[in-house]
Amino acid sequence: MMLHAMSELTLKHENVQKLINSGEKFDVVIVEQFGNDAQKALSTHFGAPLITLSAIGANYWINPLVGNPSPPSYIPDLMSDYPVPMTFCERLINSLMYVFNELIYNFMVFPKQNQLMKKYIPNAPAHISDVLYNSSIVLLNSHPSINQPVPHVPNMIEIGGFYIKPSKTLPQDLQEFLDNATEGVIYFSMGSNLKSAELPKEKRDAILKTFAKLKQKILWKWEEEDLPGKPPNVKTAKWLPQQDILAHPNVKLFITHGGFLSTTETIYHGVPILAIPIFGDQKMNARSAVTSGYGVYLAFNELNEETLTTSINKILNNKRYKENVQMRSKLFHDQIVSPLDAAIYWIEYVIRHGGAPHLRVAALDLPWYKYLLIDVVAVIASAIITLIFIFDSRYFHIGNLKPIH
Image (cartoon, helix red, strand yellow):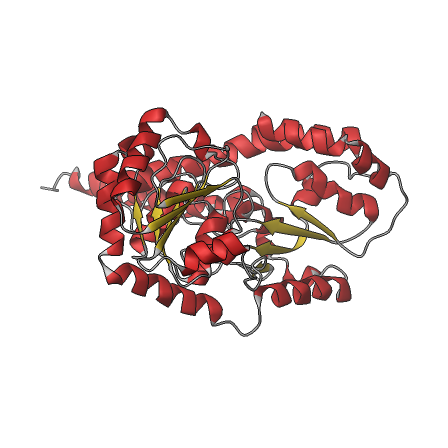
């Protein structure tokens, strides 16, 4: 499994092993939650409280580890693109995915991570379960302006967009390109992991033909030196300062893969999106943009000149997309403190209060059958069945009594 291989490569890296054996002391250990649970034992090794960072908000990777409820009745699976509310069939599949994820993690992911923990971390606990459920707090890169509102136990702290910085001055060529775009600019980027240069030729040609028809200028993150057939209204660059570009008032539309960080940034700056998701949580983010009214979802296999043109014009010619994303942006900015300040406060809070064990919910100390009230349901069901049997037997006996002559 790729995540296990990545975890092992990290733990056995020369610099990581040097740190592990350095004898250093820390006030707190922060570990991102992404199939790398063995690394959480670094908190035990260094004798410091554990803080977990979830880069995409509450999800099935982290919810069971802090006892956070996540009802599959209205919280879609991370990898789905189900709308809310879901249909019966969607809720059925969503519930099965919930059970499937629990089985995968408990019988495949955690045992392997336990092996890696024991192999590479000297002062690790006896078993990975001793640290898995011991996060002092979980920092969530989420906010109700971006994500569907969901339950959070007390030690889950939202710091969505904590990494966003005030916009800076753009390089001169980009500044002039954006300033001179009297009809506006469309910004196109498929993120850092996906490369536009690797798009199939038919998809690339459809995009080029569409862009050539538009009166807007196009700023395209293209990873190669040349773009064959590039129209005159298109400017390409191997790397672009995305946040600073989205902050420019002439940017009218962001064509994106729908990654969570890109979604956060576009809401922060109030730019509607055309999402073309490829994998992971991108489909869910795209569906959320449609539900919230600030974006259009175009499936990659349906991308052609006609569908792309229609989708772009749908957003540019309907002001409600801009209005909806600006409303979301206002919600995002309306916070008592900045997300980064909130993160700093809660990290220091954990240090001040010795790991803040008072935030831990009692659900973590219950076996699954008690948490789900299986024992209670079983007793009630047994009592009901017993009563039915007694009354039914009595009725049957009375009904068969013969009259006395």
